[in-house]
Every structure is written in C-alpha cells, then in structure tokens.
Image (cartoon, rainbow, N blue to C red; front, side, top):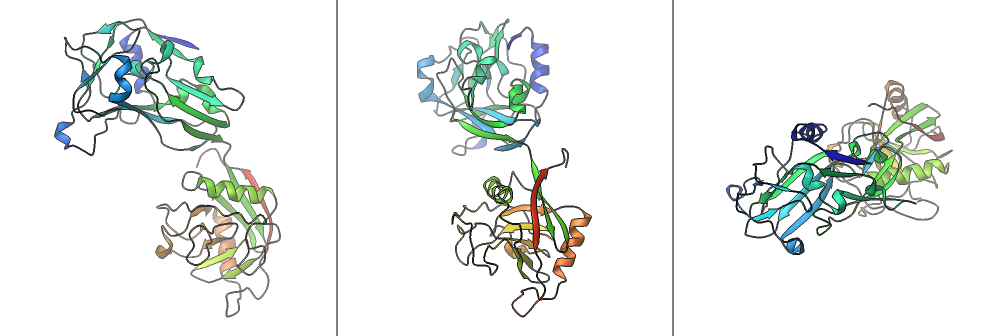
Length: 358
C-alpha cells in the first residue's frame, strides 16, 4: 500500500488519531531538565547532519506498550530519537523537499518516521514473510520541516502502528525494526506476539473455576500454563494443600507438593506489581529458589501482601460462580498438614476463548 501525504491538515488527523496525549517527549537522565527543550523546527540557516554521520550522533528506538497483544487490538508503539551528543543536531527527511516553515506540533513529525528507504518506516518480519513492512510507503508531496534535536534530548511520537500496517491485527509473531533516514539509523528489533487470548476453566469436584490469564504481567508463565493445560497435564491432579485465609495449592504430579513438569523444566520468575488478593493465582516455588516455578500453582484465599512481588501472579479467578467454588474449596476439612480429608480434584482443565472485552 502506498500512501501519499498531500497536506498538513490530513497529516495532523492521521497523527493525532490513536495518540496518547499527542506526541511524547523524553528527557535524558544525564542532564537537568532545563537543558532539554523539545525538538524544534530547524533555524533558517541550519544544515542537516550528513546521513553517513547519523549513527554516531543519534539513537533510534522502538518502545511497545505490550509484548503480547490480543488479535484485533491496537499496537501502540513509541518511535524515539535521542541526540547522543552535546551539540544540537538538525535532521531532514532524505528525498523530500525541506521546508523552512516552523513545525507546528509537538513530538516527532510523522514524515520523519516514514523517512526510510523509499519513504518506508519499519521492517516487519513474520514466519514465511520477511518483508511485510515494504507494503507501506508515505511519500510527502509538500516540503517537510527539518527538526533540531537539542543536546542530549529525546523526541518521540506514539501511535497505533496497526493503523498503517493492518496485518498486525492478525495472529502471529512479528519482529519489527525501525529504519529511518534512508536506513542509516536502525532500532533494535522488537518481537511481539499477537494471539487469541484464552482463559482456562478448571472443572473441580467443588465446581468450576474460570482463570483470567494475565498475559501482560507474566507472558512466559501464561505460555507455560497453557502448554500444560493443552497437554491435559492437570486433569485428575489434586489440591494437595488448603490453608484457610491463606492459599489453596494444586498442580503437583506427585500430589505432595514436591513434583515438577514431566520434562523437569522450570521457568524464570516474572514478579510484578500485581497484588495477591482473593482469587489471584500464582506459581509455587521451592523454598529459597525463585527460579523453581514449574507446574504447581496456588490460589490466594485472602489478601496476602507478604506475597506481593515475591511470587509470579499469572491469573485471576473470575466471576461469581468461580468465587463460590473457591469459597467451597477453602471450607473443606483438612488434616494438620493442610491436606484435604476428602480429595479435592481438578477433573479437567480446558483452555477457552476469552471474552473480547474485559
């Protein structure tokens, strides 16, 4: 798809739609704020930096809000340029007529984002197609403002990348790299996963538990859990320990709290600021080993601030039926070690499509 930018009014509409508060402006931590004004239009006599010198002068960066996104959602990304030097740097779009008129706006002009080879912006690679980004070019038909990056300053623009690359609405793994200024600059590649979000339903001897998976907070843990669910690993496994006002523990293949996945694999912790409230689901750990998460999990039966940030929270119990089931599990009779007197089993664990809206 080739798009032609014909006027400033049209461009402004495209840029503002999907932005969070318009353009965004970062600041270097190595200098006081008063030294870091916004990038501005270049003075009338300023000359742009030679393209060959840009890699030594400027960094280009892509910042995604999320690494895992549901199918059809916005793909919010911030394009950022950072001046690495103690001198102002003037930037012009290669191949476009430079304008001496002031840039009327904040942040990075969209034309500077689409300043790559043949007026492209990003390289998008997916399995079987390494050149998805080549489909979109935006050649301006009017003079484009040059901008000046102040010393040690940053300037950026955040918007929904899927507005220009609708393929990102489809399920898949995409590696994205920004190549501005005729490809003389390049950001580090960033990989995102666009997936069909799923919940997990545990059919227990006490009723159903629906788990809303926290893809953003713990993507690797969610993937591990779904892999085990899909392989039917949890079918028939017991809740081996239940401590009222504390936790209900399950998922051990040995039924005693010492087992791991059949392949012995463990996953790294993904601690976050997710609070352990009633119904929060976390990964169990061996004492003193934050890297021992495998297959066992627990469900909080009360607000447990002592667990916050020390265990990976990867799901939440959702819905009144599930909370009633959790209440029943918490109320079962147990022995002195917290083991249920009558077995409480996970009969089946099944992945189901998550609701579109939360």
